[in-house]
Length: 155
Image (tube, rainbow, N blue to C red; front, side, top):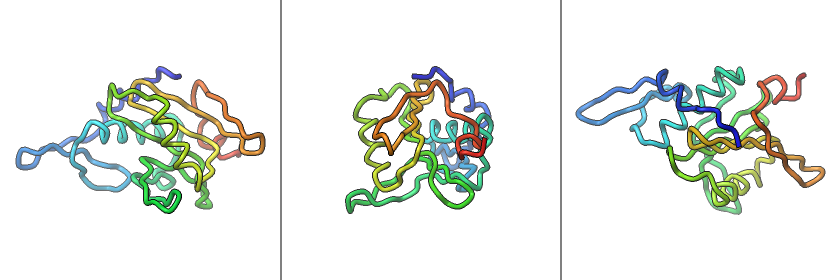
């Protein structure tokens, strides 16, 4: 488990109010989204990926639809390499929601069709980072994720 505080990026997100409703600007989808606690965490996670891991906005997808066992699901965030191959799935939960086995099971299910080498689970203040070794059928927890070039196997 990592104690990196992604919520520090909440200072950078753009929040607006229209007719009494709060919105948060999604820098990836380039539009305002109704402000929900999980959406705040998602936008903070996106900023973490951009600023800390040096991932281009063009390689990040938010609320990406996938099919898992014939059912339509949405991944909070998927990071791709420059060839469109998924590298990382990020699962976001609202602040103070436990990041527990149920959340791990959820992201593991999302990874069945995608087969990404890295997973990130966060509620903004509690974060888990994992690397997956499909050849050996195991995973290991990481203190932090590598920057994009290493994440992408380029260094």
